[in-house]
Structures are given as structure tokens and as C-alpha cells.
Image (cartoon, rainbow, N blue to C red):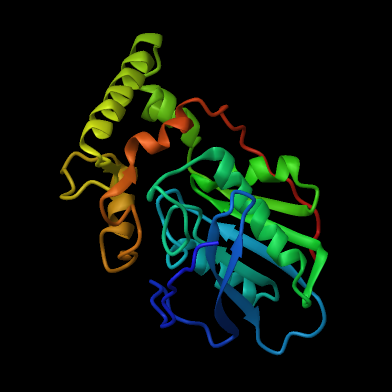
Length: 263
């Protein structure tokens, strides 16, 4: 397993709560990738606690929204962890800035592995939260992992559908989808020749005056002091573009929630 170099000082985009304790932890998935996480525990908690693993949005890191979700849920009595998915943030995995529906679904299951063996966790009361693009990963994990007793997604849109058909289905034709795949595959050839990957998909900067409302929302978070983080792909150069091609072929996720009582 790779040795990770974790930042020990508080470098989140949100204030540290006095109601919980915080520490860095690592765990590994079945692909042999070591993942980094922030573990939040309610102060003065007794006995075995219900637990929640949190990840997302797509292109974000645990120091941003997922960490805030995790800390807030810990304030409410859960033991929680926010983790960086494979290939991003402080987690391991090569090549960097990749995304894979299979591996990222496994990341959620690996988080459940870790939580299940903690002495202060009730293994029958484990849930997951998937934010934005990671909502689909959360649903994938919940569909196959019976240990997950509750799943919540906070998702604006179906990321698989957007990658295949464009925003608002603006590229929803056989010809347009083919041309998109053709361009990305040509880019793979070009990258192989040069040995350098093309990064893209980060939040546009500077922000065009005619940008759609959701792009303005992205910018207001990822590109300002409110949510900027140096390790966030959305705040900086974005993903290894052709490394995310698998999302073009991922089945379109249905909006759903699996829920049982954790308390």
C-alpha cells in the first residue's frame, strides 16, 4: 500500500466545530489503493454509534462540502468520515485526477469496511451520503452492499446523462455522442504521443457574463474564498479528461433513496 503524506493542520474551508473531535485516518480498497479520510466523532459519546461515510461532489475534496456534511452529522451524534476518492486529494492511486464508476463505487464499500470494524461503531447502523456526482456512486454501492442501511444523495442532476447527452440534453443525438467519443479517443492518441495528460473540466475562470446560473453557483463556491481549496480539481485545473470517459457509458442513474433508521 502507498504511504500517504497527510496534512495534519486544519485546512478545511469551514470552521472547526467544538462539539466533535477530528483526526485523519487511512484505509484501503480492494484495488489496493490507500484512501485518506477525516474522521469526526461527537464529544462525550458513549457506546457504539451509528456511522456515516460521506463523499463528493465530483471534483471536490474532503476539505470542502463532504467534510462539512460529515462534521455536521457528527454534531448530531453520528461517527462520520469524509474521504477523498481514489486518484484525488490526499488519497492514493495513479494516474492522478482519474475517475472510474467501478473503483469509486468500491471506495464507498471500502469506507464501510473501515467503519464496520471500529470498536465504537454499531455495524448494523452504517449509512452513506453521496453529494452531487458522487450521489450515483452512493446508489451503486447501496444497491450491492447489504451492510449499508441508509443512503442519501444530494444531487442536482444525473452526471452520467450530462456526460453522454450534454447539459439539458443539448447533445442528445447519435451523431453528437459519436463525435464526442471520437474527439476524446483522438485526445488519448495525442496524449500517448506526448506522455502528458490533458486536464479539464474545472470550473470556468474567468466567469463569462452569460454563464448559466449553475455555472455561476459553481464559481461562487469553488473559485472564491468561500470554498476554494488547493487540492480541489474544481477549484483548479480539473480532471484528466480522457480518464473520465467511462462515465459516457455508465448506465443513467435513477433518482432514489434507500433508507432505514440508523438510531
